[in-house]
Length: 158
Image (cartoon, rainbow, N blue to C red):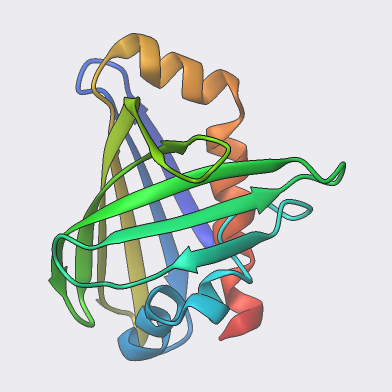
């Protein structure tokens, strides 16, 4: 499996996922940079993502929704912070309303890093929560397993 570890730190309010791929850094970066490729792995199986706006420029807003097996749409957004192609990016992320507009009451900070590791690429996703309550809520919603399943789909695309 792609995902090697997921570590939760309730004191630091972080969740860190580490995954290894038998592919070059540039190929893994493309799974983030190309919205059609991103749609094929962002979200757990059975909840395909559709990226409406996708621009990895600092300050840009990325919007998407995931469609449940019942057809319900769950909107999300990213505000791009920094971009260091093809090595990493930082984003503020959160939920969106029914029109896809950002809801700002529940946001987090995500940092993604890519680096060469044992002939392939290691990806680290570092998610910082604003409060213990929000971290616990996201974990209860299945974030840990959903993230594991989503990232687990990346190998097939490489």
